[in-house]
Length: 100
Image 1 (cartoon, rainbow, N blue to C red):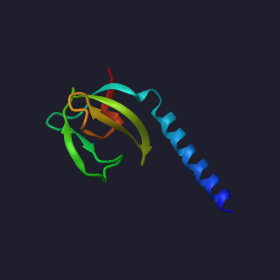
Image 2 (spheres, rainbow, N blue to C red):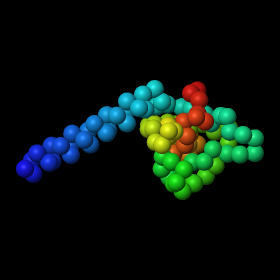
Image 3 (cartoon, rainbow, N blue to C red):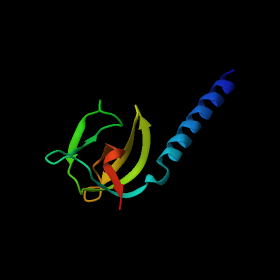
Image 4 (cartoon, rainbow, N blue to C red):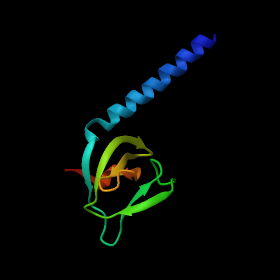
């Protein structure tokens, strides 16, 4: 019984990982923030959604490295790190990124 439960849980975890990897598809690589309204900034958040803490704001032109993207609540969120501060990592809406 325990073995069966473990196998089901492991299969579910593997499916989730593979789905996240395929969702990120062509998003890995360098991108820049664009399309943010004048006087505003793209919020770098602690997780994939508006309910997470805001770490900082990113103005248009900020270059980021995309690590993965995942759909959450009708929006695709991408985990990114800043090109000039790789230690700062968080999540942004995919709608405000374009590939370089």
